[in-house]
Image 1 (cartoon, rainbow, N blue to C red):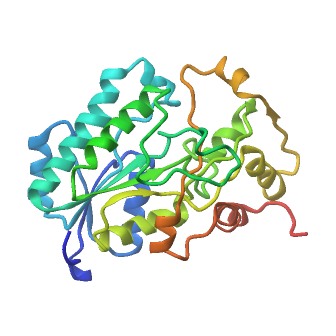
Image 2 (image 1 turned 45 degrees about the vertical axis):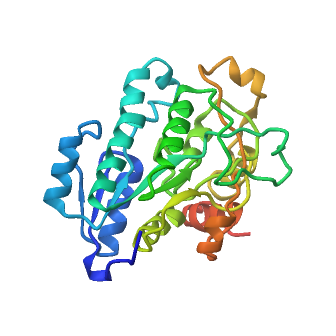
Length: 297
């Protein structure tokens, strides 16, 4: 996308003010003294996007808006038009306007568009690469995300970041994957790639500054299972904590849409940013140690 602007010329336009990632991005910009504004447009309204860009004159645009469903992706199964409008029409409108204006769009996407298969067996360490085609459309949410990622691949100005099971040190946040599974009556125990936002969101800002585009598996290297996370939770947070497991067949009886389980190959991201920690190390350093409530052994 050409040369990077000088450091004093950065200004970010962020969509997703009321969302988790959008809110965290704003706080990071404040901490780094990067000028930013939140977009007010509904993304399916092209004229409103153009107005936002004209008034804010950003150097880069971030999209952390969209529909994931509340309390979870099962919501999307019964709200399909709303999901399409936000996750497909809105995202494409924003990418198209940004291209027209010569702006890089950093788009927070999802890695929940893959599932373990014969070429990527569970436990094999063979992760899905950026160029692999999605093989999971078991939920309507994932179906829309896979569709829009394919279409966005035609836009040379878009940086697509595949986030998975996002986690932060804020264990009170109901969107936090750790908070979710700690509150479930039962959990499956499957290794997955995950995204430690405390570590990787600052990376997304650096990616914008470098004008990086294309698809990126935006996860920490490696995988971690639900039980491994809950064992850390028990060790660092609550020694009395207990949980129960159930299998995928039992899980299917209490959810509407199937869930994605996979490993993403984070080699490309790690090559660009070698300091990124493997997932288990990052969990300890960025999430559990800052929250430690049990005595150090």
